[in-house]
Length: 404
Ligand code: NAI
Ligand code: SOE
Image (cartoon, rainbow, N blue to C red; front, side, top):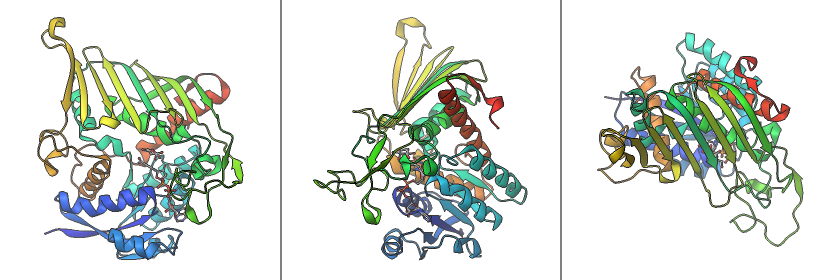
């Protein structure tokens, strides 16, 4: 017998859809003591919420997210809103005794992230849990890499090479919240490097102790304002895309975040790491890739080929050494047994479903398939983001000890 666990979601656009799908599917594909009940969805656009709720299976909707805190049925609140709202929404729900699953980055600013970490520590003493949606941890190929590293297949880590390259942020892309520092915190850096810092820390099990140097660029300082009525949220609404205003003069606004940021860092085990994030790399759509070189072998993962993990080792010596392409769809790979037979590959949405299932496991007192990031964990990632931003602004190295 499974007991329902009432989930409430805040946000109904990109991540709102991904998370709605995840809560709906987790109860179908995974077994456990708790089954998600899609209790309520909250967002700003009252006109579109009833249809959204019906399509995705939410029993209720509201355009006032605060009411979720007063609803005694709600056990878990899922925050899928722009970065500047994470703090207020998460803190309100934690004080009401709700578990909180929040989107990444934990917050737009270090101060917000610190307040969230502190509130999560207090809530944890009362048995309340927090989670952060670093979904790429939950691709089976990444999970396999995690286990291979724990088994000592690479030996000591020498290098981490992490790239997150996208191409959607050209001059026609409207100035959504993602291009405003007061709403997003930063640009490509917080948005994309957050994932790569998390992956580097998760896979190696090491912390970043110093940012040796960083450089940021804002190539596009003004952007067209989004259309009225919500078009232009995220990357939608650009001329030529559905919802965009074509052939008319558009008003523009200031874009004050980085379009690209790269940095070099040191790992607690002595290794060297490089990170690069951009929204202006034509030919790279959602190209997040990480390579780890250890003293005995290497691993490489690239999300655009997300079912594959590359392993380089030399069990019989140099004569037959080489890169092996492992299609991570075997039942021995994390999560795969819950899905399809070998070679029936998974996609973007499965990472979110796998994470929803792991959150349910954690809330039932069971071990998740792979470790889940909580606010404390995401706070550590946020400190690295801050150190790199400070290093870029000041043109010097920043030790993590100075970022608290
Ligand atoms: P979006 O712009 O597509 O959607 C934002 C949603 O928040 C909308 O439904 C909007 O109505 C709602 N919202 C905005 N202000 C609100 C308010 N005051 N009260 C209630 N609802 C409000 O944004 P998107 O892309 O879904 O991003 C949301 C969060 O998810 C961000 O933190 C972003 O960094 C993160 N994200 C994470 C991804 C991942 O890979 N884990 C992928 C994309 C986004
Ligand atoms: C940005 O385009 C974005 O949607 C990020 O916000 C996500 O975190 C990333 O996973 C995909 O790209």
